[in-house]
Image (cartoon, rainbow, N blue to C red; front, top):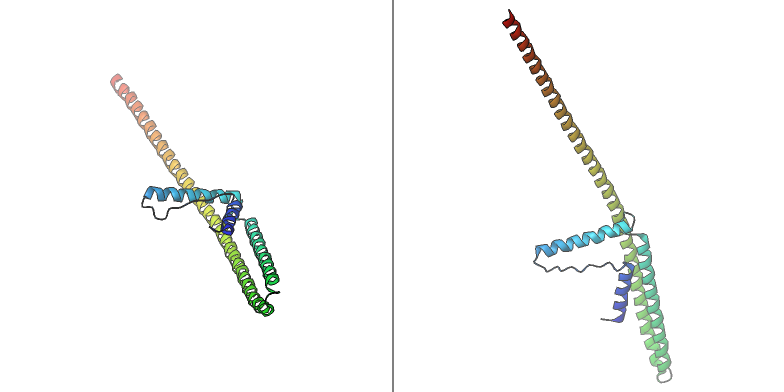
Length: 197
């Protein structure tokens, strides 16, 4: 693996606070898939918590942009240094060859710079997409919170209504029991009255 790639991956991991998850896409085990999903959701929840309730922070993009710029500047400096060294080496031996190589290198440098300017455009577009996604995510979270609150309120109202119905039923039963008791007492009194006569 090239050193640049290793360095890049180390920087990515450092920027992500060493949060990583290896996923086996080829597993046939349903339990392993569920565990992987659970692990991924835990990491996402932690990220959202760390970023104040949002899935990403602008700080992460600033860091990624700075790393990209540093990498581009380092590559440009190394490229220019190699060009100078090559030119110094070739100039005394073959004067015409240097200008031809210089032109090819100029074209190569121009292609390199165009590539990086396209990368900047793509990065900007990605930032816009992520920003839009963040806004949509925040809206969705608010919507879910509202739905949850509405659902909780509705359930609370249903429970309260059910409790009120039970309380009314209990009161009705108590009233019926009291009426029955009073009727029995009246019947006992009347039964005594009749026997006395």
